[in-house]
Structure formats: C-alpha cells, structure tokens
Image 1 (cartoon, rainbow, N blue to C red):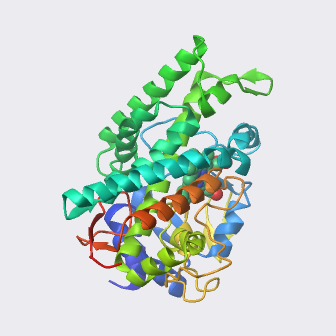
Image 2 (image 1 turned 90 degrees about the vertical axis):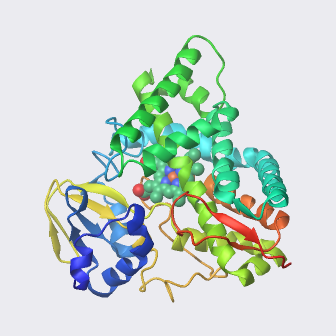
Length: 391
Ligand code: HEM
C-alpha cells in the first residue's frame, strides 16, 4: 500500500492512534490535505497554519451538526461547542465568569488536597502490591472529582460519571448502543438536578449559576441546561484524565525526565505543555464546509465534512524543531491542544492546572516508576506501573 493509500483510510480513534504519528509524518511530507473514507468520508487538514485559519473562519466552517465525528450518543447540538455564530457568543459568554483565572484559582486549594490524597492512595496501593493501575486510581478520579466541585454535582457520584464518559467517548465507535444508553443516563441525571433546582433546592457551581442565568432576556430552557451539562461532562473529564495519564506514561518510560522534574518541579509547567502538544487528548475535531472552498489547492465542496487534525498541527515541522521529539524543556510552546478560534477551550486554565498540580504531587509522593505492561500512549485505559527501587 502506498503512503497515500494508508491516508485514504486515515482514522483518529481507537487502535488507529497507535500509529497515528506515522500518518502525521506522511501528511506533512506528501499530503497535508487529503480525503479519508472513514465515518462517511471526510477531508483532513493537518498544517498548523491551515487549522488556525479554519478556526478563525466560522463563515466558511460550521461546527454543525457536531464537532465530533462520529457524533456522540445524543442528537442534540451541544452548547456551546456545536453552535455557530451569531448564537454561539451569547451561550459562551454565560460560561466565561466561571472559567476566569480568578474563578479557577479558588478551586486551587482543593486541587492540591485531592492530588495529595490520591497520590497517598497510590502510595498505599504500592505497599500492598507490585503493580498499580494509576489510570484507575489517579488520572481518572482526579479531574472527575475536581469537575464535580466546579459543576456543583455530588462529588461521591464521580465513579458514575467516569463510567458514562468511558461508554460515550470510547465505546461509541465499537458499540453505539452502549454510548446511547450512557448518554440517556447522563441526560436523566442532569435533568433531575435541574428539576431539583426549579423546585427550590439550592444548587452550587455552574449548574446553579446557569439555572439563574438569562440569555436574550429569558431564562435558559431545560433542553439548553441539559446540553450545557452534557458538553461540560464530555469536555472536562476524559481530556484531562488523558493528559495526566499520557504524561505519566511518558515519564514511566523516561527516568531522566522523572528525575529532572523531581529535582526541579518548577519545570513541570513547561513539561505539561509539551505533553499537551505531543500527546494531545483531542487529536482532531470536525467541521462542515458551509460553501465551496479551497485549502492548499484542494477543493472542498459545501456540505462536506472536514477534520481539523490538531495532533498533526502540533507536529508540524514548519512550526517546531524536531516536532516528534518530546522535549520537556521546550519553551514558547504555542500549540493546538486547546484549539484556536472562537471555540477555543474554555477550560484550558483549569485543565492545565489540573495536569501540573497532579504531576507535582504524584512525583513528590511516588518514587521512581516504570511501565509494568506495554501500554498505549493514548486514551484513559489502564496504566500499570511498578516501582523500580531507584530514587
Ligand atoms: C487538558 C484538558 C483539555 C483539553 C486538551 C481540551 C481541549 C479542547 C478542545 C480542543 C476544544 C475545541 C476547541 C476548538 O475547536 O477550537 C475544547 C473546547 C471546550 N472545552 Fe476543553 N479541553 C480540556 C479541558 C477542559 C475542561 C477541564 C473544561 C471544563 C470543565 C473544558 C471545557 C471546554 C468547553 C466549554 C469547550 C467549548 C468552547 C466553545 O465552544 O466555545 N475543557 N476543549
């Protein structure tokens, strides 16, 4: 099969992620814009510049019917991510006060406490057994618990959230029915909270704020509130869990990097940025062409699906020296892990802080570790580690 034949079936989910960096190298070498037959057919765009341009041009590129390809276990457009201008701005604006650096700083003491508690649990687990799955014990619970606090959901329900997200995001390409069932459960859960709030129960966090918010002089409908809730679940949990897991995956294979970050924890911030660039939780997101257009000489017709491959843009040799090298001391690291234009991630301050704080406490608590099994770099599946007896 020639290079371009491989790219003709380019995929960015599941097992395809094992070898996706080879695909990106091929794209940058010979086919920066191309067509894949997967998921009903889509064009991919891989150059950083082209992705930023598309992000800035909602006149040409719609986020409808869904930024996700294939779409999630729901038919409703998710607010604000699946909404185009001019409606998008008002919906996004309602969330802004809850995501300012000041608002996120308020969560910080709890973020430290929880990271310390979970690191201690991992430490205790290593006292009982040789091999510990730190994805299950650390990378997944941490952002799920922090998100529950921000959203105003009961913290003890986090295992439920974790399971839904797993089914919706990771099972949807294998078992759409399972994803649909989890999506229905999630909708029912959020609806119950809204009903409680409308019946007079005080609700904390984002849920409470949105219940009292107005748009164009009217309160939000139940459907809109559910849609916000659904999107925040999808946007805020597995992304950060993936970022923490993939950072630990890298560190487990690189003892010098572990030692450097333990010795100089101030470097964790730059390291986290490099993990986000090279092992991005969101490798790609979809758009639909609103009109006939051309990207790098390739004609794309109105109505065709297009995928912005953030992961490829993040390894663009025109932007980064040694793009495929993970250099935890890299500086001025402007990447696409949080997207770019009007839909740029609202949770980037929070996501970044969660990765940095969790790594800080994990490295301060757990001595030198390595992979106990050969695990993939991607996803939020198991990450089984063992201690080496070093440091
Ligand atoms: C490391 C963690 C995270 C990564 C890598 C990430 C990545 C992304 C990406 C790629 C987008 C689409 C941007 C675009 O198309 O331009 C996005 C949108 C969004 N993210 Fe995140 N995200 C993370 C964490 C979070 C968290 C923790 C939250 C909230 C709890 C969050 C909330 C959102 C929202 C609300 C949007 C939609 C913004 C809009 O449509 O205007 N994200 N994120």
